Length: 208
Length: 203
Image (cartoon, rainbow over all chains, first blue to last red; front, top):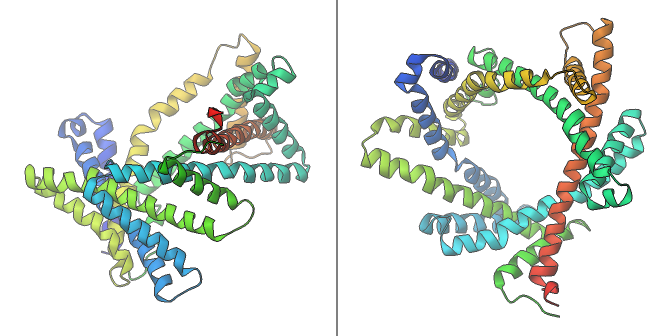
């Protein structure tokens, strides 16, 4: 029962959605709406799993005075402070919004911005490999970068047009090919899950 | 030199500098900012979900409209927390099964129409070099992903070979796009420091 019932639940919910989409009765009965509301509600109530996991891991760090435990304390204090604040005044409250705009938005952008440096060093390492594939990859990366920046057209007239053509024709076509291959893979995986052949989501637990 | 007097700008600017300091080396300022960011983001997610999902479900649906059947998905959702108890952890399979089943159903139900659109969109009139090249790129890319047909077949072999090069061109262009996007974000942060914080634009 510990594995069979969840497996049945997977199949039933998968079939409900398929039935609702492809059969008239499924649409009339509104089965998809019911399934969707169940999923949204259950996900809503499960969302604190991240906060619970962080509390567990960093709480232990503090309790056992592990190395760098003060950072764990910073994390938990910030998290519970913000949870209490947003529960009290919603995420659109004056203070909650102030913290969001002052801290979360700039730090998130800065973190993504720093990736620019790492991506550049990754490009250098790719270039050093000196295989034919790596060379082609880097040439077209440079063509695209110069085409997207104003300096490309300043250096060579029409460079921007070349980059745009590259995006529209070969890149667009290959992306479409990858997309079609991805759709086929997703369909096959979805079918395997609904039929109960793929059970990876039931694994990883002890005690059953 | 002028400098912003807005505390919100100061917090953002100091945090941005602390993030950039990691590029030199790991340091306490970066670690504090990183941990505070994770904590605040997790807190935001909980607060947001409480007000958009949990509270409306309990106050409006359960108590207000009397949708008592919603207790079942609530209990299923709460079962995820049994992961922390070794003897009850098997119960966490129920919410995962529900979500994975629903997701798979969505894939099966809604993937075919857009996929057919992508396939039919590939077949253009062979009246220009671009259209022929486009068709060749799509077909050879798909050939590269054929693993159920023997590569000894010359059409598949050379098709997959051409597809491999086409994919390299595409990945190169995608990489270039990603680099440009990241540098764009970096420039925005530098702009924030120089214009918003140090108010250099006011000079």
